[in-house]
Image (cartoon, rainbow, N blue to C red; front, side, top):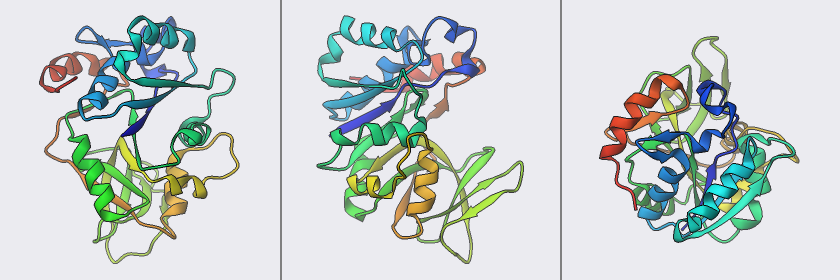
Length: 242
């Protein structure tokens, strides 16, 4: 299996920790978020990873070299000249993901979700994308129809909605920042260079199936905020790593 780790974010919510290092190198329980994510992917059999970089990108490169790339093949997708957002970042890395479905994992997400189960569910469904989602409070929700297909998006604070597929009832679920994509996803991307993968999902959902993969019983935490670091240090003890 192949995977992409989104590690290029500015980490503004983690300041002052990110004033002299990238978000990916903020530590939880003695390990950086990047190391935890790589070891999680490796635990489930991923052997080729693309890591995008921007903020203090040279420190990420040095870190990977110092750890001998954790014994797997890691390629750097360099966005130091221009931060491309999630969609643009994927599009830049597209040459690495043309032969088979691949995993995508945000570096600031901790979870014990079974990544192999997520991947197998994607293969079994033949979907364009399989999105890990949970029933939890969030400022934004993805909307799914009764068949589990992505049908829209809602901003809960403003009431804004974007509907891709008409449905009798919309099930609001929060996106977990972990997903599997088929290479066909690149056909739905705009010329770019800067755009969100959520916009791609909503456009693609008009013509293709993007499926929900619920993992309500899994551990999950967004470590993108200072307040979450203490909880993350306790959580990491229960997450298996390679």
